[in-house]
Length: 325
Length: 254
Ligand SMILES: Nc1ncnc2c1ncn2[C@@H]1O[C@H](COP(=O)(O)OP(=O)(O)O)[C@@H](O)[C@H]1O
Ligand SMILES: [Mg+2]
Image 1: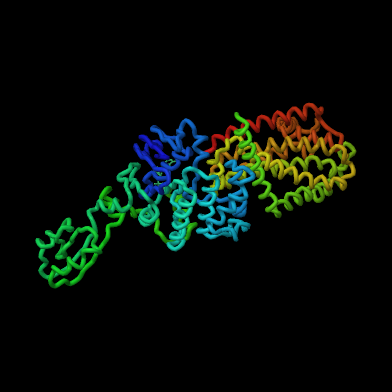
Image 2: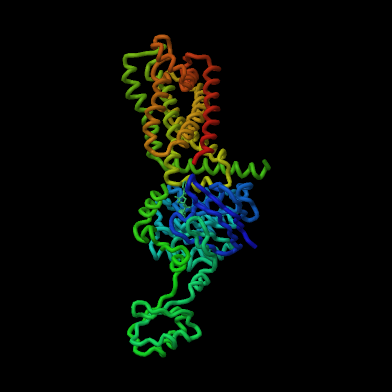
């Protein structure tokens, strides 16, 4: 069953076409990723699904409710973690969750139990009575995840959930996302411009560029569509024809004196491949990344004009905001 | 609206109020300065001028007590409302605004929160009323009612302006062109009578706060320029208009 059905969704801001005609179904229980560079229209798409932004045309249904005709019902079904942090930094972690529980009408009897449950899930129980201003970037994100799931939404939206976090914290945050999605049986829709994030966290990925979905599949299938892994070999007299005849080899090319071989499952077939080539000088293997897929589809690199992955959390947020203006 | 729906909206209003109350309690230095500042007006400014001046046979320091109370409400309320510019800047409001609670309820929660802050400040200032011999303690409940209505009006005004402001630079502008004129033209520091130059008299009479000050003065000192029903009517009307204006602008925000 599709929990989200998007039909011909379009959003224009004046002359800018932020989202051009998206058709997409998201299945119940999956972790779905929208992968695309800055300005691809990810935030705008999520904004429409959460009823914060009104579509220019087209429609979408979330948990059976129309986002335009019945926004109030949709809002009760969604949890959202915004791209920019939105914690109330004057309040403690616990108070942030309490405020949220009240706003979402979580009945008083269940409130405390649910808050404790969520705090334990993100390992913040011990710090829950500290003002969130004192939290680290990773802790804030985790609390936001907990807050997003507090009212048991049918769909949890995460807009660039690990933006600006250092690599270690990012990996931990992925673990939390997966753990929570599984434990709470929630559908998760996340946006990202990190290839690894899409690859490691998502069941399915939609590649989005300039407001359009360019490809849609499981990350492994998307990479498969590149035709396989790449092995680059330098050798004195490579037997090109012989290589080509191997059943698992897709393509052989000579490039600048090196043989570029596209094949399936390089890790399995490399020994045999090497055994038929005399005088191998050097070997390099490369698995295709989602970025290769992206380049193939759009002709440009997803990382161009993305902010560096380093730098402080505040800096990258500031950079992002400036970009948005 | 079904019972359940109404209940959820009420819970939303309560949530916002609860948040403001926690923030209020946490900002101790702000509470202290909001008490100390009016006391400085009363004892440093009021005693100084009062050394040589009585108005309607009341010592000047006692005479401006109602005006300074109103001033506290004015500053406290308007700046409380304007504070949402900051909340928006920090995206604190963003998470609140996507919740399944109507904008009107969020607005009402904010107004209630602001009025609570201001009322608590005023109650503390009332404790000091025994230092002003001309003040009639039995008039305090009526004065409080006037100040509460005034606070509803002014928090709404602050929120209305805050909904439209894009940046914090607007604070200074609002302070210079809204808050201070409202204060100086309210008769908080001088009686509104025929001795005033005509232009000043007209401006003062156009200022809704004048009627708040006059009402509070009537309640506490038993001297007033306008009859009770005029004071009460004008200030209530002002509050209704500001509340409506504020809720409309707040709903349209962003
Ligand atoms: N409120 C807005 N007004 C005008 N243009 C906007 C607005 N929001 C987004 N855009 C534009 O729409 C495009 C898509 O933006 P966005 O959805 O934020 O992309 P992403 O989240 O993928 O980085 C960008 O070109 C952006 O500048
Ligand atoms: Mg974005």
